Length: 277
Image (tube, rainbow, N blue to C red; front, top):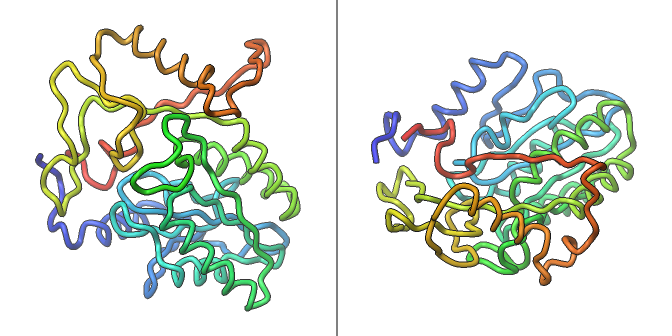
């Protein structure tokens, strides 16, 4: 797999440096590495922070700005950010109204964000968390105890960010985030695997007519591998799983199409802006 990178050891540093140069509204901090709004902290408003392993760009650093995140902590590729990054970033963006940590439900993320939360409490910072677990495919996975946090993360970062921007309290922002999480469901498929730069080879292989149904954002196994017949058939199977998966009780509510919905199509682990391959 060819990728437009210089050195696998420097790919994250170069990507973040390029992001900061391209967007003057962002500030890249070093030792530890994290990214914030250039005008942080913003007094009188709740600060939002998220983070996770790199390789899913533009999530999360690409979603920093007015009405969205105040800061983000990138880990190494597919690796959770360390507690010191989360702590230092939170201290930098706190404008006095508290910090809301938006966490995808992966074991490493949960552990490191929990450690940072304890440090922030000890430092007198008002802090609370929202855990995203919207994946309907599998209950447990290689990286997760419980449902995985996937596409709903971006919607929550935007919608809760807008609430924080208009002046909602920390508790109100957290309540909105949890409500949105409970109402969100995601399902993923893969027609091919991603290639982590340091590994140099795809994380799994599929036959030409095969797809991984319910794949995770790191390439974790889904519900099963099945034949890909057509786009129409695949979409039908995805919607059936989203709306009728009896093991995922949040999906067992009546959906009135007149109420509207939000559909998000993305490629979380195959072609990120970190390395076009």
